Length: 318
Image (cartoon, rainbow, N blue to C red; front, side, top):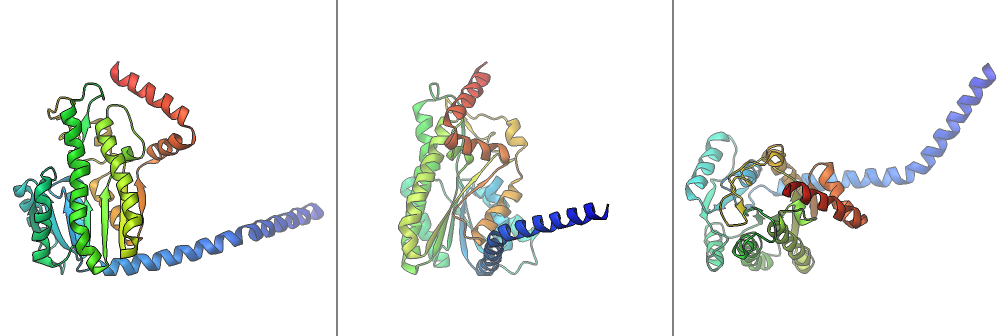
């Protein structure tokens, strides 16, 4: 009996030694990397104080939540969107809900991303007030619900105009001052649908795929100027995006999708985006396991992915 116990003890000791020997070379570097990441995150968090942050789509949803997160971090927040009255509401909320935060009064910037010719002038307005734009958060955009065939080409153009060309124009307008100062960050809010496309979202997915490609190219080009590029691809967020989405005819969709309603809160996503900036992340997916699995399925087993999407499309049309 004692012999069996001793043998088991010896075997356990040998197994523990083997596991320790194999794992230590991996565990120690991982631990060191984790510590370095935490130090960098804390340093970057302190550096956010006093930074000028321009947020598009700041009148509601994720943009509004981002305004609160950056404001609480001590940033000089510039609220940009089409609806001036809603921007005023967000500004008042920031000042009333966080009266003890030692920060700077938010600035309102009425901005229409579809009016490309006005964008450079809007950026100049911000530069005249604050002298710089440290962080641009490209959050403004619209969605669409409609199959590719029945979606009017005017709708495709409008989605691409706002989600892609407007974002690109604003980014290009901000870059010269960032490059002159050798400092800045471009944050673009994409979608998991910019990683893989699903049925009845062709126009929206196309605009987000374009944003992914633009961001990847831009990141490499401006690295020499110490400008960072962060692309964020969230899953469903519980906002009014489906209510404000367009149909294939261009009318307002006006419905709350079940998936959207059960999505993450904008406050949680906003905090995750702020953490991503502190960590200096370049490309992140903020979504549950299913969208992440779909992303990898598209790349590793595309035939299975295509079959799943075909079945999904059939279910929608029946």
